[in-house]
Length: 527
Image 1 (cartoon, rainbow, N blue to C red):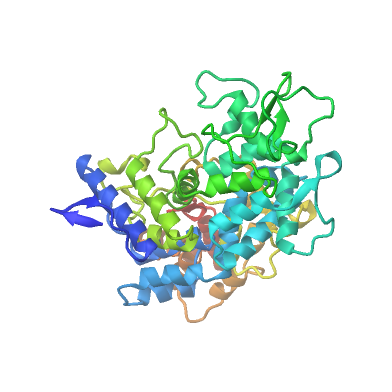
Image 2 (tube, rainbow, N blue to C red):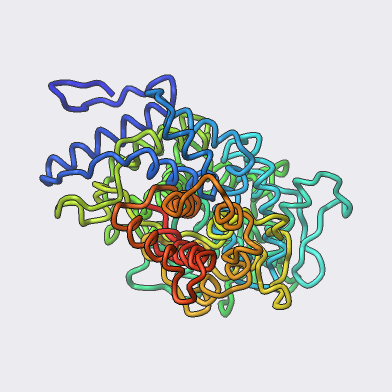
């Protein structure tokens, strides 16, 4: 940014797009805080930052050795180096793939009959993210895959037996949406452009920005999956190239519509290109900023708890962004980076706002959309499960690939947790249920791992001859909460263990302490 008299006046994007992202955030938020007389919170300490960034990037809390090593590192740039290290780990790809799958195909998280389809598509996303495939290429491949309609609306590849694992995985995207043009059009607009076009699917709404005709025109880009009946209503207007694949009949109306973009324009149809290729080009065109704005806003929401545009898929005059110029600048930087998610994350995590403590230290920090302190964010089931594994030392844990909840196994698989605790639509508004509470209070996973006889880490700490009671309590705090206990916490928990709790058994009392920490709000939230 060019600086004149202390004010940012002209964006001058740095060679490193991550630096541009950080500069934009710091400049716009500082100006907003000053204008609103907001006193931002202090910088988070190393332990708080370490736990936060591990959860955001890898989807789990850090191990005790990881947080202690980070806290002891004297390097001035250790936070940026930590982010680089985490982005190079396989856990980054797995965590981001889970977020994208939940955002793009939420029905595959809640519908048990579509879970397998979502898992397969998530594996595709994971493979692409491991090699840092640009996000626009992932979306383009998803939208333009060579699939054709099969029996009862299911999809099959044109060559019937595809060998490419990516194409096999993308097929599941279409099957999860039942290969219906209306489902594909609605998901495409919401997931990739950031607005709910399906609100106009059945009728015109007086307050909706789009009409029913526009919905079916957009869905018609996927019309190849529902060919027009031979004796259907006549099409009014000149026939265009691809006309047999880019038209849909509007249900209940004696007319058909041809595919059109939501801005009212149409592609220059060609026999050599499919309607979905034309749609992908329009969505990913640099002159159409909706894709970059939407993706930046989704990642911002995941890392800051609430989007710059909130709700994230309802743009309009009634729902303006909290920081519109910042959103535009971040979208431009993201596009300039070649839609590089890692670059965006480096920029977000290096910003002053991301590194603020979550503790409110001034009344002016109360509004979560001013980002003057870090917002508390509810953890997803995957984050809770993986953090339990790290905190307790659980071995041979069943992963997300276990496709069904197994009551006989106590529902302890990662899949079971992801089903029970879906990724929050808005992390700052996480809601809990009785079943969730019971699972973390007395589910098989927690019961086993808070037993000195069964818990790997609890047992090791309980038997450690080199630790006194206070040292054992501190070790449990580091394992579960990534921090030392406060003086008051140390005194209370140490006294409880020394007394042996209600049973007079010090080992059981130590297990009680671990159970309390794993069930605490602090463990179940990122902050």
